[in-house]
Length: 119
Image (cartoon, rainbow, N blue to C red; front, side, top):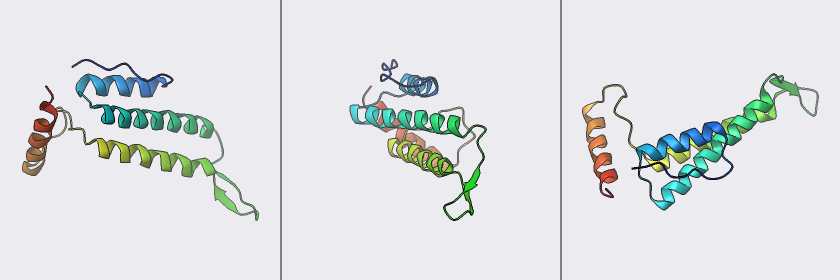
């Protein structure tokens, strides 16, 4: 299994995530598109966080009330979108994680069987 070429325009963190993921997993075409979407979310989150860096987290609303900075909600939504994409990909966990329960081990075996079919 070799890493697929990363899509054009990915930032450093997203490109590293793409490369590491495609080194470990042999993705189908639709899974690669989902991974690209996840990588684009990483880039969006980085850009939003850069904009928030040093900014006040509270601003004035239209009626003079204190409101959360609008980008805080955007960061939250993009993090949720990233998490959703990763859940849809259903990539098995790597071996160096904490010890698994018997149920998790069964799920791991099923996932390994799924991912080894293409090899």
